[in-house]
Image 1 (cartoon, helix red, strand yellow):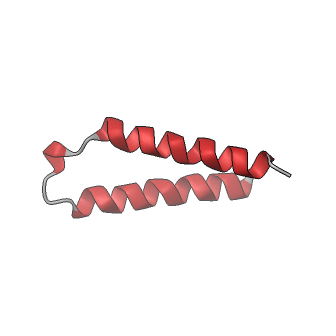
Image 2 (cartoon, rainbow, N blue to C red; image 1 turned 60 degrees about the vertical axis):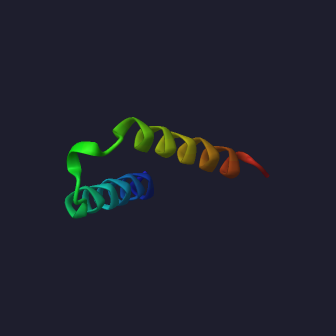
Length: 51
């Protein structure tokens, strides 16, 4: 359980740093970021479920 929370915290930190370093914060496509994050999580889930 701790490793899952640590992984989620790492994702939040990386996205936060990217947001803070962005030169054009108004034009960030949050829907696109969310879709890619969801695709990554689904892919990771299937990889861990495969024997």
